[in-house]
Image (cartoon, rainbow, N blue to C red; front, side, top):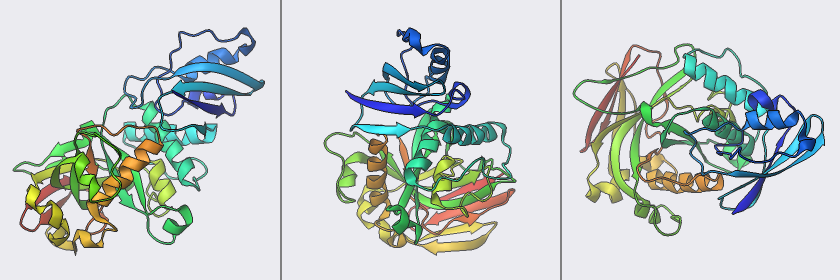
Length: 342
């Protein structure tokens, strides 16, 4: 059992502040000195049955001023740490969640753009805590130079909700996008997390232990904010990693797992080829993406779950779409998948 201390800047936390995905036991005694902040604290930690983190318990409160206080929480985590959740970050998360629920676009970024990975993932974590929605997987994307050197990471991650994961059939699967926001399609290998026994995989060769199935597929990347990619990786992370669904296609035979780099992949939009490549161009490949994701989640106190899908990264590139278009990804020797972008 470890402790995490969270700082809420103002009583506006009543409407906007919630620690990342932690279910808090509110059957506790709040010190009488808490005054009106006690109510703020209780409303700031509502129960959320859709949260993906294990339950936590408030262990104590320290009030610094009438408008700021620390909350000490105990919950299972991988290490001691301090998380500072600001009203600014909570407001950004709320704005993205509201826009996604309504299917509306955001004309501008809803606050100050995060400049660090930690700030970006705090916004993403906060957004997750606002949904009563199951996570079915995670997307992994590439951070390009020079941002990779500045941030100290060459990949990013974002959640994929279970109700946005579809299986390919005879007819193209329909995906809705944010028409006035950002939208793109990406051809990817989809890896399913299997039993997570033993230590966290150390490298791409070791990652096979935690993967029990691979399929070909398409990631639909879409956000209410049109400049989500143009504004850089931290902004991409802050809005759910810029994901709007996955399409899962035919299974990749196990004897091809060691030869994914040799599978030619192409993406077509409305019958025209817009990209061709292999995973040899993708850093250390799909299994390397899985290792990154496992480490990223555990650092955030999220335990990888068997059955989650990993969208392992764009193979042929990120291809913008505008709606009413047909995207088809072909994987040589394996099959193809088609998505109608609505």
